[in-house]
Amino acid sequence: MEAARLTFIFCDGQLLVRAGGLEPAPAEILPDLLAGRAVKDTFTVRPQGVVATEVSGAAEHPPAGCEWVRLRRLIAAGAPDAVAACRALGLLNWRAKHRFCGVCGAPLGEHPTEVAHRCEACGHTDYPSVYAAVIVRVEKDGKILLARHVQRSQEFFTCLAGYVEVGESLEDCVRREVREEVGIEVADVRYVCSQHWPYPNQLMLAFKARWAAGELNLQASELAEARWFDPADLPNIPPEGSVAYRLIRGLV
Ligand SMILES: [Zn+2]
Image (cartoon, rainbow, N blue to C red; front, side):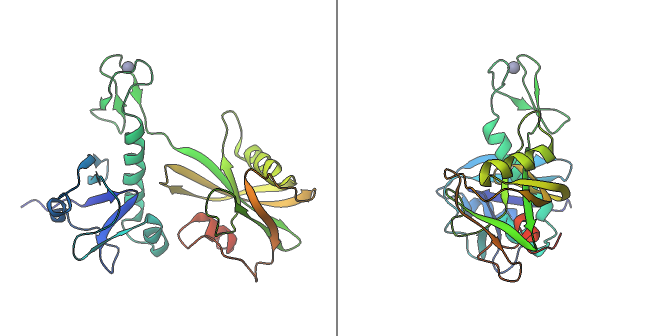
């Protein structure tokens, strides 16, 4: 008898797991879950062979014995399914926004052999896109620069970050983001690690850099506050499982 294939059931960016653990909920739960919900998308993630299914509605009222969790919980715990679940959600997010051909406008179909979509009308192949973003730990005299953003995660102080622009090197992006957001110059920009982040579909590239010149002068549209913090006396920072947490804690 063929073993049941692993299924990831997502809703609003959250994964359905068995309550009290981080093991994905079994596929048998799906009929119960679909009372009052619809399947938004379902496909087989290649090459893992895992089935990814996204259901409509809000991530609430989980079936008995299950709960919805954000994927950072799996990443933080080093759960065996964390990488595959991030890939599945990243692909779901990409598929939701790439349903029509960017060349001719016809609906896209599954590519027969590759992880991609193909346009039957014009032959265009649309590969999954990943948005490159840098995040940087800037140091000055043993202190680190952390900022509170106007829009997102207001309750946290975190590292400066931003999307890489077309035609830009990662190091240039780090220098530009820091200059734009806080008005200082940095030197010794060094890559340290990366992490896929499926909200919506980013490759976070983490760097360290050293303050070189200038006083903090905040971009008011982006930042509510930015300060130099002693690593032994940190404010509220993003939770474990994010690359920001590892950068700030000095774990990478
Ligand atoms: Zn086309």
